[in-house]
Amino acid sequence: MQTFLARLQRFFKPCLIFILSVAASGCMQEKDTRTQLEKIQAAGELHVKTIYGPANYYIEGNKPAGLEYELLKQFSDYLGVELIIHPYHSLESMLEAKTTKAKPFALSAAGLTRTKKRLAEYRMGPSYYDVKQLLIYRKGSLRPRNLQQVVDPIYVVKSSSHEEYVQKLQRDYPELNITYKTLPDEEILFKNLEDGNIKLVMADDTSLSQHQYYYPHLNEAFELEKELDVVWLMDKNDDDSLATAVLAFFTLQEISGKMELLQEKYFGHIDTFDFVDTRYFLRRIDSQLPKYEALFRQHAGQLDWRLLAAVSYQESHWDPNARSPTGVRGMMMLTWPTAREFGVTSRIDPQQSVRAGSAYLAKLINRLPDTIAEHEKPWFALAAYNIGYSHLIDARKITEKLGGNQNSWTEVKAIIPLLQQRKWYKYTRFGYARGNEAVKYVSNIRKYYDSLRWFDEQINMTEKVARDMGFELSTETEQVWESIDAE
Image (cartoon, rainbow, N blue to C red):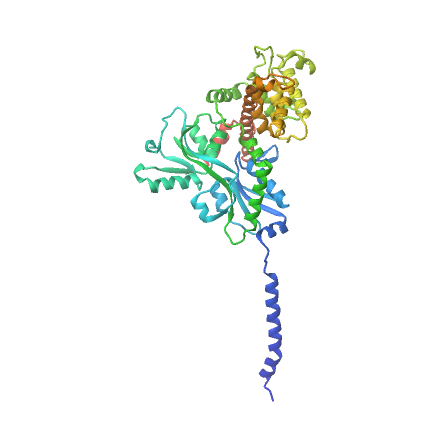
């Protein structure tokens, strides 16, 4: 006769085996064998880390913008998923942010260069543009010509490739006695250099070019490194699926020419810098723009009022009585035929001039074919504003005959100067045009436009801070920032 315990064992043993087998089977079924790319596509979301900045990500008129943002948006569209941007205020905070269930970061994209330390910590995508590493000083102060002449601390963004580089200098060249200090972001870095609070900064050439139009005293001391690859960062693991997709995407970008268009959009007009012109422009923003800003806003129509203001500055330096040797006059330097077309009775009347200039520029933009990308149409239209629509058509035709893309501003602006060479213009319908002047004209306006957008964003940010801190919007800006500094 079996004991009670034996009977329990006989009953529960098969039950226990069944339960364990079911549990094991369940565990095997729950194991997710999908690749990282498959998980991203199944979730329908691509989560990316970046930092705020003119080349990375910012909000422009309630819409996101920035080279990195546009590139990431194209990549998310390529994958067929929604882009979820997680912007940070500093490089350090972005790099330290860890992936979670709510934030399953797939990429870090913020103009990041390939470095030895990052190679050890991350998987990297292909290079999509390159930068130079510069030592930057304040114009008017003592300029070091080489590392041996550096005696002041070098300021860098914390956790940046520049911090890594200056640490390497300290290890490799202890006899130089190089010291460095860190600040959280480039805006603070360059603002302190412009104000004379610090003497030396290490940064990329693209960053210097973008900030010189608000901080004109920034200047290159000498070049430290060149052709540094800018890449996306991904976590290191045994899964190649996302990295393979990134490589395929950038290959298509290169073949299609889309990467070149993005580079033109954000960097195509920052190759030259005029210190005297920029300082004069900044002074006119203070002295003249407040008198006419309401006019630009009132008559902008489909245009960004800041673009209209930039055109007016290029034309007349915001002087309603301006006159050129060719007879054009006023804030928008109108010819009499254009003035009459838009009902202008007095070209030196600011109201009439701005209204007509805005309408004329909008007409030129609307006249352009839809084969030209919307964000490039203003540059084509501005060239036409300067040399005439017919000459622009000639330049586009030459571009096409030479095997180029007549819808790309990058390619057409390289051809426009040919219109002043007889061996080219003699074959065009409308003949000679001052092509070099037109290209410089568009480039200048884009620089002024960038500066005005930056100043407008600073004002908007100040007003937001004022509201958040309980100030009236009429409060002096200095009072707001003094309170912030006091905290």
